[in-house]
Image 1 (spheres, rainbow, N blue to C red):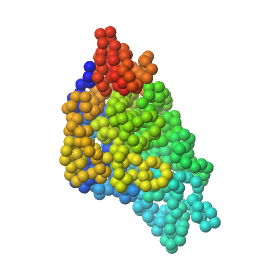
Image 2: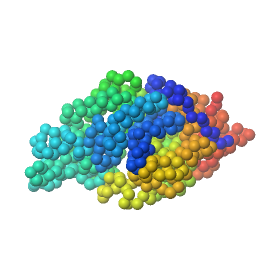
Image 3: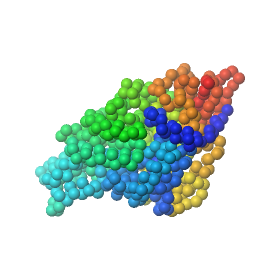
Length: 560
């Protein structure tokens, strides 16, 4: 029995979902990377008007909310995560009127809008930082960042041994207004991204004002970039280790996951709760354990936190079950929903990760077995969407897009790629503009090419090529999201009932719903737990009440 596409949810049904209370507890949130989604003016760069024009597609896909990566005024040293003005739209994306129109149209379609917020650092072109440099040592504006004198006889050494996530020292020495070598400033990422000093009250005042600015415009929430990084350990102590990137995720660092960040989010929550409409905060918080991630979503802090432990788990039944149990067990005491995510703008798409052997990390340079990767990706998606909590979908994964792993060096734009250490710098592969049509300039992305080159054959993966085609990845997503929306036992709750299953197979019940995922490379036979609702590949039911699942396949049953 093969899966049958479900019809797109009508607008009225979508709007009803968007208006209900606690919508975020089981929401499916779609990440839009604006520069790679849709280009309205033919300059090769996606923009807000392009996103706005494609909102009906997202409504019909069946998602509840749209998360927009940064579109603020920025020199684009790190694709907009270096913000020069938090209250302006960068001209490459449009203007504030475009943002307002996008928000209004989304709401009319029953979609919510979540915007990125970047509070750990600004651009070096932010007015505060430019004035801090111009005014020289002793400027009060330098206190809003981490300026320090250097070590060594003439201050020629960095103030401490911290390393940038993008490679090299986390400190850059400035040239003072008189031309002399002067103080150093902290940047945990690129030198163009100086870290704010959150011990200074002006920083907190500014961001509370920024929150109100966008809430007043009508946004429905904020995804907080580097939510774990705002507070640094007192005195900025040496870490005493090299290759510090390898330590991330294993321990609390003096610059990440400090307990002081939680007081900031308690203050922010008070602001959010003043507004009607159930706006939310989502934390990008890389922590050593899921248990520490749970600290960010206590009842008086943030609403959701990304589950990076799940994203980095291999396609393996035992490992998946362990991370699912740990996630649910950690979130339950604080009353927060679990979140599940397989891809985003910083990691290799899961259709390519699963095409390669496990253990290669989340940035992979090889295409692997494309057919295997897509089969596993489809199965992993149905597993993810069957779990209790909220799920995130990265643009293009509903098309089964792989990473573009063969981009020429001269077209790469990831800032980490141009540094000799730190991240691999291969994030461009998941940021290639998505295809909308089989043919045409940039496969329907826009009329003027695309800022990153699209591979040959991209059009056969396009929305137009897959729409209405039974068994296509796009129709699989539409069917899955339609079923999830129509059945209250999907998404809601905080637990699963595990069922006995063969080795390499996950099976769990949630009310009248049963999910079975075969993570092995061989076909398996399991009980047929009822009528097949959906499957990522062809499932055969026998007269003996059993179901035969092909390799790397997930199936949804209903007992009703």
